Length: 282
Ligand code: SF4
Image (cartoon, rainbow, N blue to C red; front, side):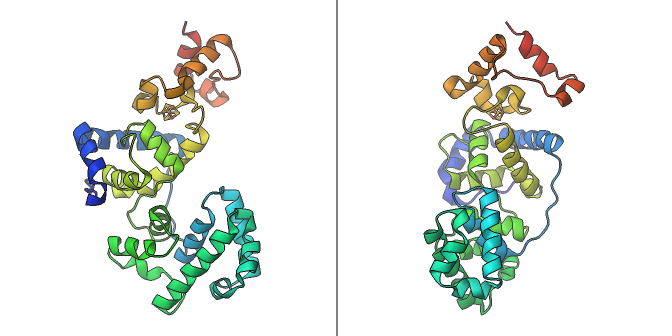
């Protein structure tokens, strides 16, 4: 399937993209996806309850997955139905979700979302979004206070399997470092650009594997470029890396410090050539 053209909301970023070669970057996306598949494996989409996904996504704002999940479980223990969550005293809900942080912001946000769903649908369910035209479904979700493009995209992709590409902090960082989108592209533009560049059938596995790579190797601080499978496709690596992170790692190799690239057992068994070449470099 050929990539879709993004909507006019990312017009400026798309112009930059077109100027730098849409087809070339589209091919890069496919190569990178294939490398990530070989490293992290394929991911099979499974539907989730969209209300659960929405509430979980609100809880996950500015926290990690562990704290989000613990807060979610505690909330469901105290308030077993969505009606109970919606009608709970705010103070009680704030306390129940405190592990996720920002309880005074998130609790009213969750309740407002549940009230809005009830008022518009007569029940707390979001399955109807599966049958709405995609842009209508996205607009419906983002009309809820506190639900931005990322949260809406998470609900649409993860719960309903709709062809949208959520962009979190890892994906935003990686796609700019790799040179898939302009450095100055905002996260919202990144949604549109990556949806245009990647074929919809790879959105789910590509999204999950980019996050896995961002967590495992391409950290925000000191990305581990020397053991990265995407080196050949990475603009950041080709440029030597801002902040000399790559040069530091290379000099670490020469000095034999803790920052040096160390081939893993698995790489050694596989005869990792990159490691050998780097360790032998002058
Ligand atoms: S080469 Fe470095 S900057 Fe590029 S994707 Fe890999 S870890 Fe990230």
